[in-house]
Structure formats: structure tokens, C-alpha cells
Image (cartoon, rainbow, N blue to C red; front, side, top):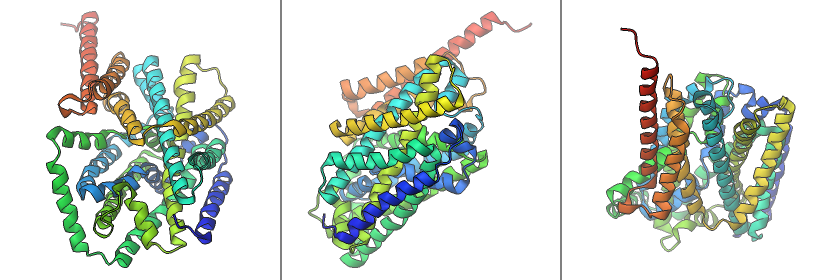
Length: 468
């Protein structure tokens, strides 16, 4: 990439300033501060942090590539994510916040379903966070390699290391504070890219819109019904209440703040998806020979002036790091609360728990950086994560939040059955009939949950017959 000295100075200043800012705001007194920010985070910060977390490279460069190849299709597909975020805001985020003694999803399931469910959810959550962090590290390394020419492993270490330092020292307080800065950066830089792409390319917007609809019809016409259903289900369920998102509900100052923060994030997602998919539709008109995956950065290099090009690189790195740092924090808290504390049955003072979580953050960061160097495919990694989360922990968590007395014995078998069924269907059987693995896994989860719930209810009635 053709970066000049000014661009490079902007990138270096960003990393230095972000690190300093994250360290300055780190004031941590106890484990509760580190894990959930003392449960005093206001609506505006919940909104900015949640938005910065879900806007990862997939929802930016990935969606521009999809807009290039399939027009407006993925704008409408992505609205499934918007819908689930709004539904979480209405029905689930306030309920999560009401679990005042809980710090993680595993805590909630442990309270509602017992120790085995707590541990199972903790293992899955920690592994999911590790996988996500490795993917984010790899993308960051590739971006730095593409912009500076540095080796990928250097880029991985830079992206992971800077975020890891302030995650280690300040926990979720530093994460949320720096994410507010990162959100501001890319909320300005990406619309500027859209503006300059339109102004400098001379694109005919009517033709770009028509081309987007033409590509939409071609893409949807080449897909089977189950493929379309699978896309919508994946975006609706794949990232619903994953640990970093759930942590924002726990951290909010009140149930109404949690609700408002999630609602604002849902609303902003519509604008964001329109911008990034629209960039792809424009690139298809003005850069027709460009590989779809390169459309985003090619637009930036061709149409942004120097200085703003450096800001765009900073924005892309912000997008990656804001997701990665949230995941590291959530994974470390889950490891402490849901794995170590359950297996060892407590016994730690608050300061010891805080120090262990900091070490967990360090361990997850180093491990994710190493795994990133060997990860064969970003998409394959995401498919594995989605294939585990949505059919395992998610349905059990939703039922635990909505039911007054969820059946305690049902959660663990349902989570295990859903995860195994989804993985086998996707990777061993290769999705027969193009039926998405997430649907099969979800069905198995709910069937096992329902059977155990009914049998538990029947046994309860036999042991405690009602008075005649």
C-alpha cells in the first residue's frame, strides 16, 4: 500500500495514544471493576462499546466484499442481526442485568441449572473467546502486513500486544473507554471513505444502485431455500449474547440503560450495514476487475488523500482491536468464574481472583496470537464458532432468562447434544440437502431440553401428587 510518512505517523500516534489512554483510565479496585466495570456504565458507553465490539472486520471489509459480489443481498441478510439485537434489548438484556450476583453467562446458567451447566457453559464460552481472539489477531496481522509490508507475525504481535496491555491492567473499564475512542474513529473514517469514493470516482449512483439490485437477484436466484434460511438464521443467532455482548448488559448502570444501549446499537447497525455494503456496490461499478475481497482497501488507496488514508488504516485497526480486546476480557472473566471457581469450589479472595483473571487475560492473548499464526482459514474458524455457540449455550441461556423455573437437569445434556449435532452435521456429513448445521444443532438442543423437562415434570408429579 502506498503510505507516506504522514500516514505512518498517524498509525504510530494512534497505537501510542490508545495505549496511554487505556492505561490512564484503568482504575481497578476489585474483581467486579475488572469484570463488569462496577455495574455503573452509562447508556452512551454501552452503546459505543457494544457497537465497537460487533463491528468487526467481517461486518466491514467482509460486507464490502459481499456488496461487490452480491449487491444488496447482505444488507437485508444483516438485518437479521439488527432484529436480534433489538429483541435482546427488549427481552433479554434487562433480565441479564437483574442477575446482580452474576458476572458471566456461566454464572446465570449455574444459578438456574446447577454446577454442571455452569462448567459446560464456561468451557464453551472460554473456548469461543479464544477462537474469536485468534481470528481477530490474524486479520489484524494481515492488515498491517498489507499496509506496511511487515511480516504477518509482527502485525499479529502489535495488534494483540497493545490491546492486551490495557486489557491486562484495566479490564473492562479500559476496554470500554478505549472502545469509545475507537468507535469515534471508525464512525468518522468509514463514512469519509464513502464520501470520497463517490466524489472522486464520478460514479453514477443510479447505475451503482441498479447494479446492486441486479447482483442481488443473481445471487438469490443461485441459492436454494435452505441456503437462504441458513444465512438469516446464522446472522440472527450466530453472535446472539456471546460473552462480550452479555458483559455489556451486566456492566450497565441499570436495566433500562442496558436496554437503551442495545437498542441504540441495533439502530446504528442499519446505517452501518448500508454504508459498507454500499461501498461494495460502488466498487463494483468503478473497480470492476478488482477481487471482491480487495474492494474495501482498493477504494481507500485509490480515492482517499494521504493523511485520511492513514486515518482509514487506523479505523480498520480500531475495528479489529475493539472486537479482540472485548473478547479477551470476556474470555478471561469466564475462565475464572466459570471454570476455575467451579472446579475448585471457590476459596479465592477478591484480590486473588482479580490477579488470576489478569493472568488469564495474558494467557488468552498470548495463546490467541500463537494460534493466529497457524489458523488456516478465517471463514472456517468463524463457521466452527457459530456451529458451537448458537446450538449449544444460546437456547439454554434464553430459556433460563425467560422461564421462571427452568428444569435444572436439562441444560447440560441439551448444550452438549446441540454442539455435537451441529459439528457432525457440518463437518462430517457436509450438510446433507443443504440444511444448515445451526438449524440441526438447535433442533437437537431443544428436543433434548424438552424431553428432559417433560420427564422431570412427570417424575415431580409422581413424587408430589396434588391433593384431591
